[in-house]
Amino acid sequence: MKYSRLEQWAEREVGALRRKLSPEIARHADGIPVVCFPAPTREMVEDEGIEPDLLGLFVGPALDEAEGLDDPLPPEILLFLENLWDYAEEDPETFREEVRRTYLHELGHYLGLEEDDMAPRDLD
Image (cartoon, rainbow, N blue to C red; front, side, top):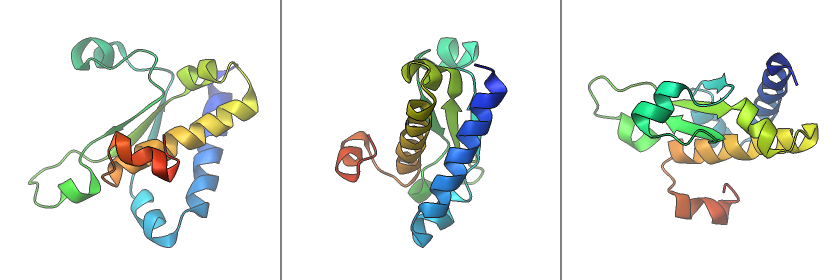
């Protein structure tokens, strides 16, 4: 599968999902860029200890942490599309579902939710 096709599908899924969010959550989600990579970079893996098969990652301060920081890094949601494609066993519909689930999970981190808070909200 060409990476550009995976990126198109991911952008379409994230956009559609954002339109379905509640107005309060959508207001917060609209301010967070989603950046797509094929997989974590070598630097992420070697320098930051990121697992090479990770599906997504939230970086930057959570919503409740950004206030009061002098120069915070901007929050971003990273999606690792080739990893998602492999995880979906190269099935387009499963890939789209995993993009939605991964995006919502990372958005949950931005909103300040911990891993244990994700399952009850179906964000795990």
